[in-house]
Image 1 (cartoon, rainbow, N blue to C red):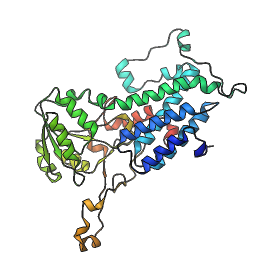
Image 2 (image 1 turned 90 degrees about the horizontal axis):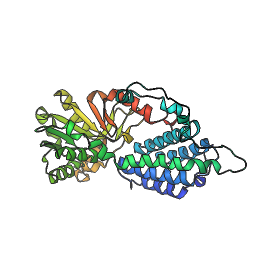
Image 3 (image 1 turned 90 degrees about the vertical axis):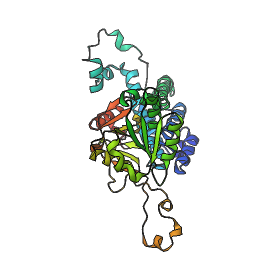
Image 4 (image 1 turned 30 degrees about the vertical axis):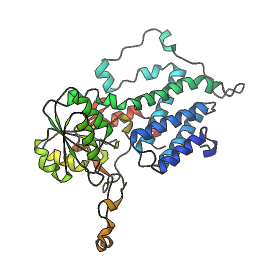
Length: 370
């Protein structure tokens, strides 16, 4: 049974973040994920529980409230799922000596490490094991007191990953960007910005930035790249198809990466990806793994049913014309997996076909619906 909102530990911090999300005072996937992880750390540190299921119930309730406050900010739910996964993992390691988790090998681990070796010696399996007693009638807080230190470390790992995501995504930029290339990007993604600036330390190349009307986020991106000494050109969105034949690579940011390998990206990304496919130009998406979302695209007409101010498309000064038309200004495009060649994340490069496997490794199946 889910606890009442006022009975949730750290209730004030949770409600503060709920209000910020509803008012759009927390903007951006990474910022929302960081705020969520910090609040969950407070909740776990103040929680009183006698078994692991009580703690999971509390975290799920907090996650449900945060996700409902801003359903279109998928990184909030993703962070909650990641914390739940880490909590279960630490609990299993503490109680079972992590014997089961050591034998789980993904395709990526197999390629890097080769065939898993048998664990030798029984003493090694007991390393790091904590003495836990659930539902102890003599000391109600003994279970939480013993488990909280490792749980706080697990949540800190999530925070550390979020804080270093730009550096980890861009560390191999020089392997993807080559000298004298012409690269097209659209909008102002901080991940893409860090990626291109990192590549600029090793390569001389040119970036074409589409201005991304009507938000014109491309202007800020072009200024930032130009200030970093990268040769940058700003072009209107209508020129994307015309110049695509000269472009060597398209690099996009993502708002959310879905389980089928598709993604939500800034409006105009679908135009760039479709033009790239027509010219057989590779499309690369830079995004942190916290944007992996165990959802499928249910909104085919518009990217995420999230709309910006229509007056920036057709102003009210148009008078009679405004009364006769419905103006739609979608904020995101849905870009299908068939239009993407590779995702560059803080955990390496992955084709769209393997995104479902990453989600399977990152989140537990029980947490897909909070």
